[in-house]
Image (cartoon, rainbow, N blue to C red):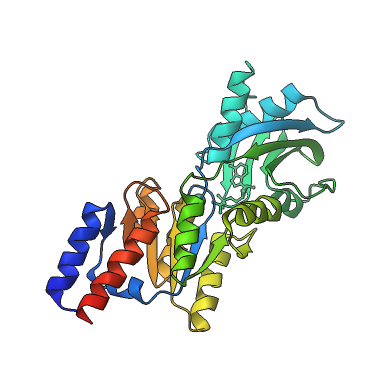
Length: 285
Ligand code: ADP
Ligand code: MG
């Protein structure tokens, strides 16, 4: 590829809302054969809503929600914002807590009346020694709540898929690309979203380090990987991928780590990026 054709391709992509931040990203993308998407905020809207409140025998709806909202008050996670919104809609004041701590990819801890309040995934609470009662797999994301060792119940949240997500996946598959999904979310919601989108390969319960390791494993197999993500936790995996594609609607950390930025945040931008890159490289190869 000549510098002039790369410049032309980069310019055409920019008009279509796809910013190639590095010249060689256009070339790299034309060689990619696996596109891995983050789920939350990338394929989904990233604006979950609480759909059910399920207290254990040790709490009621209002107590469960007020404690969860108190623990999440200082969190910037989308699940936290949804829980605060639901408490507000029900006229519940978040419980007063102190000593807030966020545990990346797991949940939050806070202190209330001398006890540790834990709010987050089943895996997070279990790893902290809380006995979470077994439950059937759910298509919703479940956020569990415990005060000390006492399990108080869970909240169910659902995060709708972006309207363009299925179209983006279908278009990439039609172009011969392998498509995968990686998420920190539980198996149930991850497999449900993957099935709806026609993604055969979906990896759940991944920490940011696990996502990076998965991309490294694919690359070790000789695959050339583009990773598409939006989050604070996605910076490492964006850097590991052959081409890191960040959503312009995502966090600054992700945008900085991306080789390519999709301005509108629509996943169909990946298809546009792929088209421009293949066309540019084909024309001048
Ligand atoms: P994703 O990889 O899907 O973008 P994250 O890595 O942000 O998700 O979080 C992974 C999981 O950890 C979430 O699905 C949730 O179960 C749990 N979690 C993380 N942060 C919080 C929080 N502030 N409140 C409740 N749960 C959380
Ligand atoms: Mg995300």
